[in-house]
Image 1 (cartoon, helix red, strand yellow):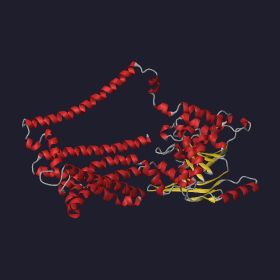
Image 2: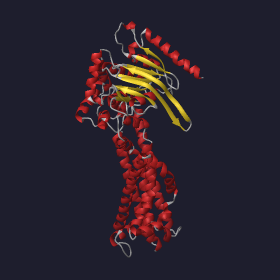
Image 3: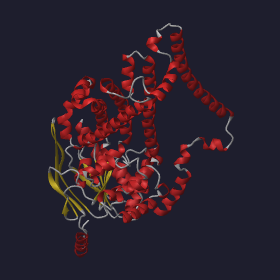
Image 4: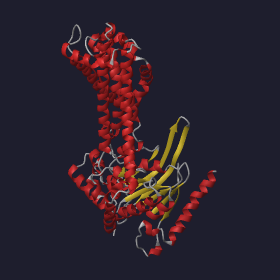
Length: 280
Length: 300
C-alpha cells in the first residue's frame, strides 16, 4: 500500500470532519455471457461504505451477492461501473481487500502458521514482520497451541479462525466475507459468528459480508443491504441499531435477545419472501 | 473481554486437543482393557495371520503342483521347466554367464534395471512438464486434445519396428518404454492439476498470486498424491515397454534372456529370468507405494 496516499487520505478525513467513505460502488453493472445467452447478474448497484462499518448483504441465492464481492476484490472487472477504494479505482486484485470464502481452503500440506504466512509469501512482504504478525494473530484467535499443527488436526471452528488469521495477515483495508460460516454445523456456526463478530468489531475492521442467513446478518452487521432477485439491485437498506441496549455495543449473540432483532428479522424476511412468491 | 474469552477457550481446547480425540482407546488403555476388548484384539490378530498363511499356502501349492506335474510328466518339462531348477540355473548364470556370451545374470538384471529407471524418470518428468504446460494454457490443451486421444488409444507396441529402425537397438528400448508410459502419466497428472479445488485457486488469485505462484504453491503440492498414484501406473507400463523393447533388439537384459532362452528352448533360463523380473517389478512397485505412503504420512 502507498503510505503517502494513506496519510493524505486521513488528513482530508480530519479536516472535513465527516467520514469519507472507505469504499464506493458506482453504478456497478455486470452481465455474463454464455452459449445459452446473456445473463444480467447485477444492475445499477451504488453503495458507499464508511471505515469501520460492518455491512451485511443479504439476498436469495443467485442474486449476484458473490459476484458483487468478486467485483469489489478486483477478481472480476464489472461490465460497467467502478469500484473506488480510498479514492483509487480498483483495477485487479490487491492487498487492500481480504477475501474469506465459504470453505476455509486451508492447505493441508502446510502447518497452520505456514498457512497464515501464505498471503505475505505471495505478496513478497517482509518475512520477519509477517511472521510476527502471523504469530500475534494466532495467539489472539486462540490458536497459539496449534501453530505447528496441520489443518486436518483442527476442528471446523478452529480452521475458520485460522482462515481469518490468514486473511488478516496481509493487513487488508476491507474484509470481504462470502458466506463464511455456511459450511459449519449450526452450533459451530452460531459460536463462530459470535466470536469472529467480536474480533472484527474490536479490531475496527471494515467488513462486507454476504450471507443468505438473515439472523446472522442482523446479529453481526451495522447495516444490511437487501439485494433483489436477479438481476441483483439494491432493494433496501437497514441501519441496525439496538436502542433497547442503551447504546452499548452488543455481541452478535447478545443482539439476538433484543426485541429489535425480531423486528428487523420480520422486515427483511418479508422483503425477501415477497420475491420468492413473486418469482413462482 | 475477548481476550478472556479466547484464553478460556484456549485452555478448554487444549484439554480437548485433537490428538486425544484421535485416540479413543487411550483412556481404555490407561485403565485395564476389558476382557471383551482383549478378545477383540486376539480375534483381529488371528484373522491377520489366517490371511497371511493362506497367501503363502497358495504360492507353495502353486509351486508344488508345477514341480510334481513336471516330474511325473503330466506336463512336458521341456515346456515348463521345474521350479526347483530356477535356483540352480540362477547360480549357474551367476557364475558362468549365459551359455555362450555376454556376462552373468547380474549384468542382465542391471541392464534392464537401468533401462527401467531411466525410462521411469523421463516418463515422470514428461508427465509433470507436459501436464503443467497443458494446465497452464487452456488453448494448448484444447488444440492438442484430439491428438492426445488418438495417441493414447494407439497401441504403442505397433511402433516397435519403427522405433527400432529409427533409434537403433538401444535407444529404441527407451523410446518404446517412454511412449507407452509417458502418455498415461501425462494424462493422469494433467487431470489432477485441472481438478485443483477452484476455491483454493480463487483464494490464491485474491491474494494476488501470479500464475507460476498458483502452480508452485498450490497446484503442484496439492497434487503430490495424484502424481504418486500416476507413478504406480508408470512403473508397470515402463516395465512392459522395456521388456518388449528388449524382445525386439537387445543384446542384454532380462527381456533378451527370455527371448533368447525361448529360441534355444532353454526353459530354465526363461523361467529364471521371469522370476527375477517378478521380484524386480515387485520391489519397484513397492518403492513407489512406499513413496506414496510417505507423502500421505507427511500430510496425515
